[in-house]
Length: 90
Image (cartoon, rainbow, N blue to C red):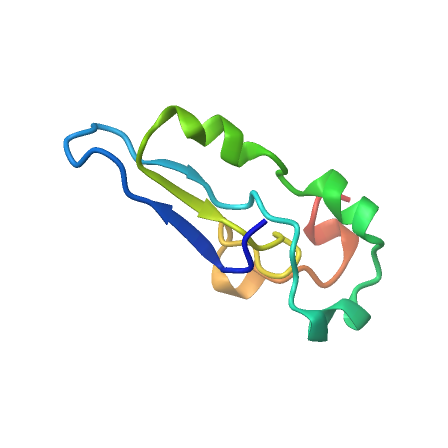
């Protein structure tokens, strides 16, 4: 896994689709790990691992390499960092 926030794969310029997998990653910054109350295996259950493989149908891709438990970019800014289990998936 790349140690970057996002991976941009530029394919054919005239391809009609850009596939995204915005939470394909499991990585979190080392400074945050002591603050987590979840083991990596428990985080993985709630993340979207391997969605980057589904996005591979398109030669143009944007792949998010961060765990949704660091920041969930599907949510508004005020609720993008989970503070308790009810804010995630329970």
